[in-house]
View 1 (cartoon, rainbow, N blue to C red):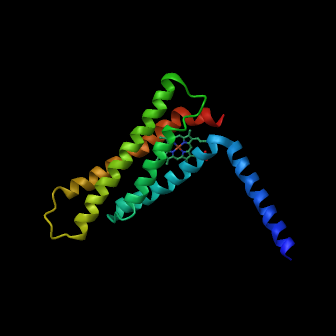
View 2: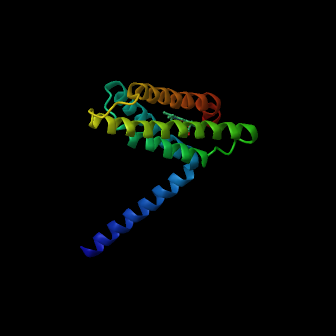
View 3: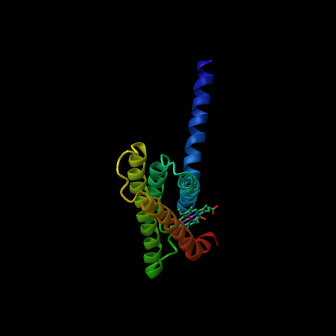
Amino acid sequence: MVRARVSVGFAACIALVSMIASTLALAEQTSIKNLMGQNFAGLQTILVSLITSNYAQVPPQANAIHEHAMDLTRMVPADISGADRQDFLSYAYNLDGHARDMKSIAEVLIEHDQNRAQPGLGTDQLREALAAHYGGAVTMCVACHNRFRQKVIQ
Ligand code: HEC
């Protein structure tokens, strides 16, 4: 019985190690894809928050996009070099700027909306600025994909 459990445990270890090895073998493209899928989900959540003026989900989702943008700056695909590499990086850093602005504006709005008696200093404009940064973020997704995604996929 004990021996059976030990060998099941051993087989599980082998399976885990081979999973990790095959994941590493797929290298950076798989991890870029994973990051991207999470970015996409984050954007959809942020859009719903913007439309309903209920911003609680924005800071965590924007923060995830910020972290993924920083990851992207460290994962430039090997076949992108020279000026193209700088462009790839600038799209990633621009995406990061929009994500961080979405987070900080949403935090101000959340605080304001919790205490509506407070004088609302330009909060309507802030809601629009938040939407503009959302648009800026989407523009960076599209810009980087148009230039670089095809090359990576080919
Ligand atoms: C700096 C470049 C860059 C930016 C900015 C970027 N992406 Fe990507 N994205 C890529 C690359 C490269 C791939 C291809 C990865 C692959 O095929 O392995 C990709 C692929 C994807 C995919 C498809 C995964 C698939 O099935 O091929 C989705 C979805 C995606 N990105 C969403 C987003 C979203 C949403 C944003 C903006 C919030 C974004 N990306 C911003 C570089 C970028």
